[in-house]
Image 1 (tube, rainbow, N blue to C red):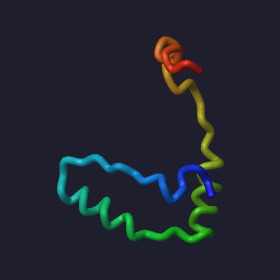
Image 2: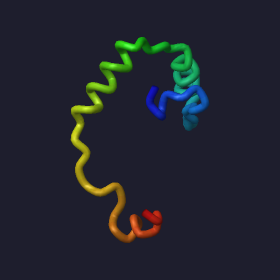
Image 3: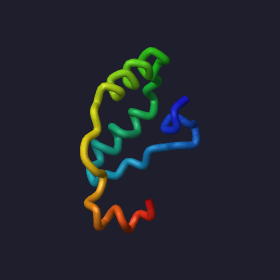
Image 4: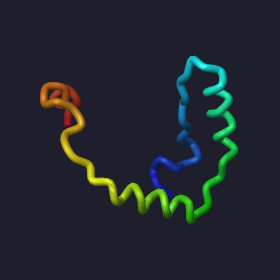
Length: 64
C-alpha cells in the first residue's frame, strides 16, 4: 500500500460549486481494484518529472 493509500489519508476537496461538492462526495463510493491501482501506478511510473519544484529562492526557504 502506497503512502497516499493509507486509510487515514483523506482528500480535502475545495469548491465553491454545489455540483462539484456532490461530485466529490459520490467519488468516495468508488472502489479501486488491485488491478486498477497497478494500472495507475504503471501509468504514473512512465511520467518523467522534469525541473525543480520551486524556484531556487523559494526552495531555500523549505529547509531542504
